[in-house]
Length: 466
Ligand SMILES: O=C[C@H](O)[C@H](O)COP(=O)(O)O
Ligand SMILES: C=C(OP(=O)(O)O)C(=O)O
Ligand SMILES: [Mn+2]
Image (cartoon, rainbow, N blue to C red; front, side, top):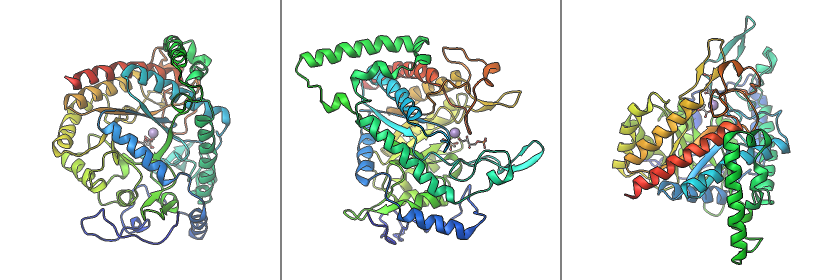
């Protein structure tokens, strides 16, 4: 791939040339003002010379799987940390993150009877949009943590200072994670004969963990049966799985620094991840983030809250997918359990009526954040599952396919969200709260949700088939 200057844009009505740096002329929400501009330029130069982390062909493969989602023939599970940490890169942790995603996918595939497209919020989910630029810590005003791509969480001004060298460190972090993800998912770990190994012990002892064990035993018998029928041990469908990466395209210095023009097609791809999404706080139609993603050919997601009107949503669809390519655009609905019933139906109806092909995905986390009386940011499992179930009902009632779920999830035994079959309550939140930003479901809660979701999806399929 090359990184040449510009390409004639076919995505805009004006026909103006799109370049991977044109966003700089637009208003940048959540802007990054580097304290040392010369140092930032050096980091950007380095990024521009680094090899791509993903290849255009892989992004196209994901887009074609998302096209299946758009037409109701697959389901997406997108999950991982709210904010990855530079300090938490280990083979064990990445293996465990894959375990829970594979485990949940198996439950969903089995329950809903559909392939699951697996995407990790991994290998680049390193920057956070914040509600407030600063916070008061022990009486001192510090810059908010904006993710390890920009600064660190330690409670002193130096750690919070934005450091452009972190962009290059973020690239190397992502390369390490991606390397392990690729090795695990193609090197035998995702093999259907490994289903029991995906059940970590703290999950296995929960009600859903036990239910999973029964399902895994069923899979064992099915695999044995396939062998008896002559399916070979090295069959790719049984022994490996496609696994993709995604993150919020927030820090455009980083994203444009890793954007390359594919020599064969002349198309631009952001080679930092297979799928990039635009967050709720940066999706202004005339803003820098939307301008950047309209020109790249990776599949794109956009977070949508109840602040988005049907008219605005249609403009988003037209701007990001003027050619109406199935799989190009995923709408990630994040409204909150108490808002979705009121706000979502009109949006789905508008998109369905306009005939835009989109993948509908629920992010049932970000509309359900609350702060406890003692000041802890949390979410309740009940709100998360309730929003997802409402999403499935509303989208399928409009005749569209509720095609996915986007979760903040960790394999670890953390205590960040309340509820679930283990009945974690508010007093326990302090026991093991390690998230750098938002509260994540732990592995047990993730598996609980997968079982609930699988049932709802089966019902939705029946409803849509009528
Ligand atoms: O995932 C991100 C958070 O929801 C976002 O950064 C806002 O968090 P804040 O309100 O704590 O700043
Ligand atoms: C910040 C996030 O989401 P949203 O843009 O929907 O608030 C996120 O996914 O971490
Ligand atoms: Mn978050």
